[in-house]
Image (cartoon, rainbow, N blue to C red):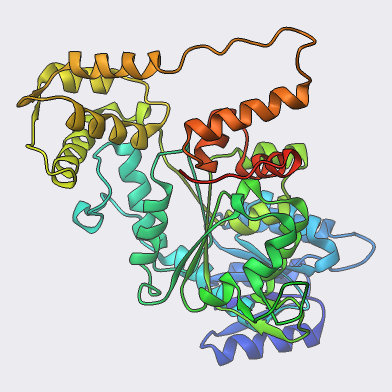
Length: 450
């Protein structure tokens, strides 16, 4: 049974009919008191609650009702319904424990998807221990990692939006792939988008597509990433790098599951599961005002944080053995064996680059070290050699170079060391890909992969 709480009879009737057509029984309440009475009398699986019962209260009555529902029925999912202009009210409701929010005028498809997802999450069993055979590409036995995999098993069958966070190199892409592989959309498209590499001016064309003649040089129609992902999963990588103007456009399509192709006035619908990932601290960005709070809650229905490798040192030997096998096969080299000292040395390292850095260290050892065994001394020597190849740069004499010239020279040096790889150069500079692209444009530098 779904409880619809709204003081407008037409809204009650519309939502009840929509839900009935999709196999859900409903009951209705016109006031907070009536809603609470029904909750105490009938078994309700979900509440669809309006936030504005009167203009005078400006949503206070809706927030108060939500608080009382959360207090009396803490596990009951509540989806909020509010006007687009009252999004801050919906965000306040999400902070208070609501499952999701829908804006008026709503999209029927979005209402049904939101209800279906909330019910599926509420009914999903709490996994005990992830079946490791279901994740062949993910190596590790640490409880922190297994808890993430347990949650993947639980939420993958739903259409819940998932936000994957963690440092660079922790395996966020593998978790996104696992969510898709264990979902009902596994036979549909799996589209990955690196938002850090898309400028604000190209965002609409890249994500929503364009028609011929939409702008200069638009000589042919182009399909956008959302159209490519229809019926499947879209992964929004580096979501924290998204320009503020693009955040608004993304929020619209996530809210309504509809968009307009650039240069066309025809509204198109899309059926996608959204997975986002970032190594940035989005709550901190929300607090600073650089990331929209309403978009954060739209993306963050389920949050998965991947632990850094230093947080699960017991998995380092397992990963090292796995990478050793892969590297020997890939480079057609005899497979050496780790000594116990080597595995202990590897497990003791902080690995700021996480799993990716460990893999590179093992591959380098396989290529360089001759002999049947890899010892701690081999890895220590290779680490020292690598560090020696990057001496401390000398700062220019004051007055010899402007700040712009210093910045340009540093960018060119980092690009050269990264063989033209913008992502690696941005990491070395401690800035985002988007920020680096802006500086490349500013200084007239062209990034050319080696």
